[in-house]
Amino acid sequence: MQARVTEAVNVRGEHRGQRLRRDWTITPGECEGSVCARLLVRRQRSAGIQEALTLKRTGVGAYAGSSTFYAPLRCRGRTYKHGARVPYRITLTIVGAEAVQAIMFARRITATYTNLRRIDTTPCSLGPSHDAATYTGAARSPLPAPPAVSFTAAVDEATATATFTATPGVGGAPIVSRRWNFGDPASGAPDSSTEANPTHIFSAAGLYTVTLTVTDATGLTTTVTQQVQA
Image 1 (spheres, one colour):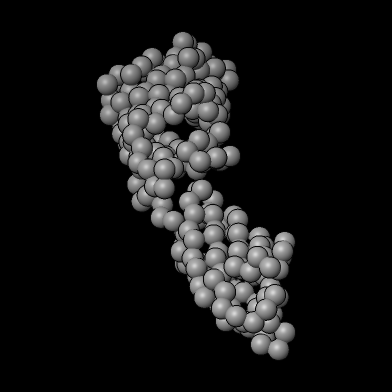
Image 2 (tube, helix red, strand yellow):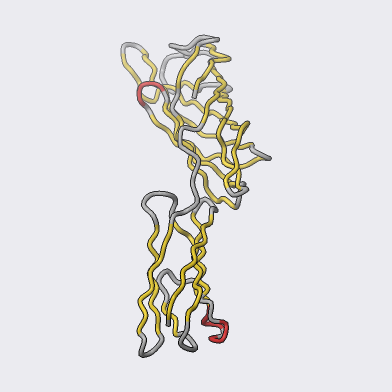
């Protein structure tokens, strides 16, 4: 993220108009389709300090959250590691997104950081101080792809029993649901399954079209079909 300091009152090492670079890692949570209820933001502050903050959804493409960090202060020849307590708020807005299977994924982001005042915890008087900044950035991670999956079937001809094994592709988001259809409506309710590697007893000898649909943690789906001889 590229940052520009918009306010810097009595904050050492900052001045208004200063341009900075900050690394933010954003992890979505509680997502349903294109909407995520929260975002976990890990941000890189100065001096190599990393902090995590949960932002809650406040509107369409908008998130906000508040927290506190501590800044070192030097007082009477001593450096206080937690010399200033800094409550702050971050608001984040998604300003650009791209669709995969009708699910929108954020690609461009703006944000603001606001600290209304810093609280001095040292014996010295810091005096009124606060800062603020605006951020802009683009997602570095590539757009997710639908899950890659295949399956094999081992059939016991004597009992017409098939054991299915699903093989997900390497990488990608975790698989969160599976739906099997064995193409055997005469078998009744057992014609479908949500197990990872199910077993099915076919109702009669023959050629069956077996379908597996998987959904990953991003909401993307893939359907694969295979002919199975029972």
